[in-house]
Figure 1 (cartoon, rainbow, N blue to C red):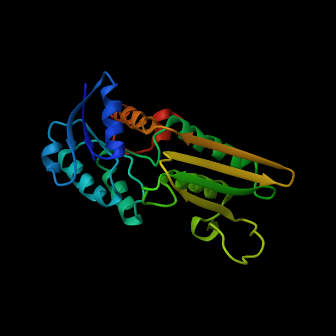
Figure 2 (figure 1 turned 90 degrees about the vertical axis):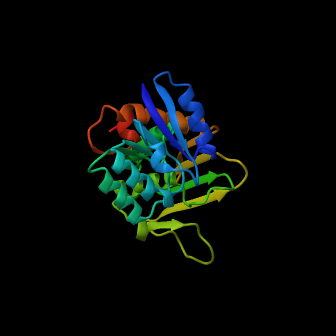
Figure 3 (figure 1 turned 90 degrees about the horizontal axis):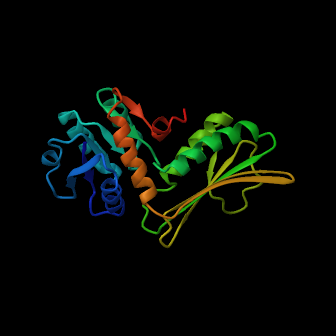
Length: 245
């Protein structure tokens, strides 16, 4: 039986994680944490932590996990380079799963995007990414979109800093040869939509994933926590959990 700590219990993902954990026979939610509560106390007698809060809280979660030698599943997005470095450093001591998205479907989209980028090469196909989320989401582009862009820039040998165009406005001239477009939409209660478009003269390929429930992500995170119990120290993502690498 895995004793689980869920942080951010009062948030949207916190509620979904509690529901997903309750549906898993081999998991007990032994502790929860919210803003203003004692994090160190919540870590006692815990086998794994799932954190889907805010990126500014990650450093404190990591420090406490290191203190208690507790494996960690991180679903928070929007981390700075310095925060990502803290995660990598902690993974030298702890087993950590850190992923922008824990949905099985989205991770299939990641895999399909990589294969498509190898076939639908930039000498013929222009690439665009579109994502939409609810009005309350604070980071843009989404962590999932950023993962898609990382896959695309890796496969096309381009650069996120130099070749990704975040929206377009004004008289910008024709599309640059190696440009990848990134477009962020916000509104309503959209859980998460992501589309990768490969457009050439005479044809277009679109890969799309649409999430209608946060339980999709929550169930994947609980699955990752269970998987992590059998893993050595290191930094993993959902592709590792699903055996897609």
